[in-house]
Structure formats: C-alpha cells, structure tokens
Length: 176
Image (cartoon, rainbow, N blue to C red; front, side):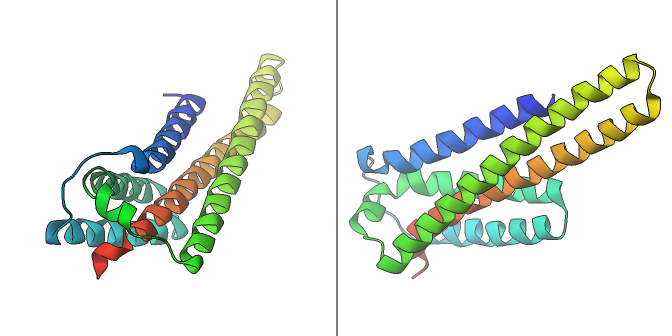
C-alpha cells in the first residue's frame, strides 16, 4: 500500500472518529455504564499512555498498534455510554484542554499533510533524476522522501493521540 493511500485511509479514520464524537448528542442508546465500562476506560487510558511513550521512544509500529486498540475501546464507550456522558458537563478547564487537544491534532495533521506532499514531490524528482542517470541525486531524494514519509506517519499518530485524549477526558467520569 502506498504511503499516500495509507495516509488517506488514516485521515478518513480520524474524520470518522470526529464524526462519532460529534454524533454523541444524536445517539439514543440507553445502555447504562457500569463497572465493566470503567475497566474499559482504564485499559484504553493505559494504552494511550503507553502509545505516547512508545512514539516518543521512536517505536512507531508499536505506538500505532496501541493507538488502534485504545481507539477500539473508546469506540465501545462512545457506543455504550452516550447517555451517561451526555449528562456530564465538561469543566472550564476540561473545555480549554479539549480546545488545546483539537488544535494540536489539527496542527499535527497539517504538518503530516505538508510532509506527505513534500515526500511525494521528492519521490517524483528522484524518479526523474534516476531516469536522467543522476543516480546519486536520485538516491538522496529517495532517502529524503522516505524520511518525510516516516515523519508524516509519526505526525498522523500524534494527531490520533490528541483526538483520543479528548475521548479520554470526556469519559473520565468512569474512573471515579
């Protein structure tokens, strides 16, 4: 799967996550939240913390897997605990943190988009240089493109972590 295709799928995933979060007010599920949901919340929160640590330690693949699992658990909470979540109002501090996380998420996605565009451009230029017989320049451009693809991937994972931090905050009441 090409990097741009992967990135598009990832961006679509983030958009769907946002839509799910935005659709909480429209959900009519009446399932009550209980102790099992508190366990799910704790597990998702722990996974998110581990993912952030792995990403900071440059273990991107592990971080991605942990984020995916945390997202699955938070999706369960969104589906099953909407009525309880709707009854709870965020504090002013939580509302501010939510706005900060959204801004960080948007910034990380914008940076990922820029890196992807730059990487694709360098990849094309590398192919053109190779076609002209400029092997050294082609190799250099391909290395730069690979590095930018990897940095874009990291930024995409960071964006997802910021989005999930908002989910974590929304469902923090389950931890009490």
